[in-house]
Image 1 (cartoon, rainbow, N blue to C red):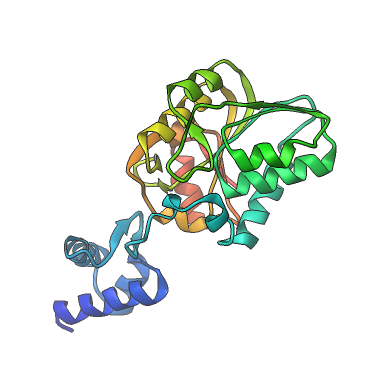
Image 2: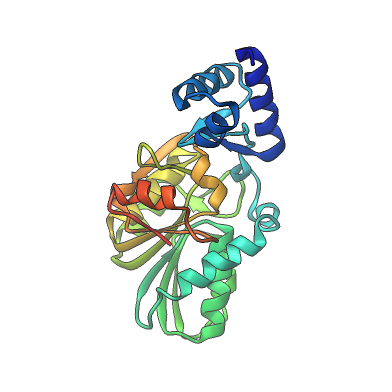
Length: 253
């Protein structure tokens, strides 16, 4: 098969399936993985896909530009699994940070239902609202400048607020993770600086992410995998994902 035809088929597969893997493509076409990587590089330059660790994905829209209410309707089952895993790590008496994330709201709901005594710091309006009637929760809201989607706060004011506390556990969202380079992304510097400030004060940091974000990237690197302890997925991690994270002494659950 000519290279042009192979590349055309690869681009079509990414559009249809959302992602492809280098090893599978090499096996399918009977060529080397290096050749497939060259195909993906050419297709990326044409804007037809995005190269990621072990393969490629579609060029996706930035969902973080939508409000929490719009995002919360997506990946609901997977977010529920992540929230359940997070709850297994929360113990009475902890100081907990809940980041701006649709999954954080599910966690807040579970905390309220549990009656657990906790201190919860958050910058997200929906998390605050979910915990307003949780009488056993000492609730601390950062305040600050409201963000572009008007569902949370950032700015130097919010950064100073989160930096004033020590966290037993920080549950932080992400726009994507590059497992090869060990980079953890968000889309804005303001949000990234706040997340970084929290991570610096946390005994344990867990990144909350749907599995598709292991193949996606954002604009701002707010942490590296070696800076966090765990990644919580809504499914079991694949072997290659676990091995890639292990290089940075990070566990995927």
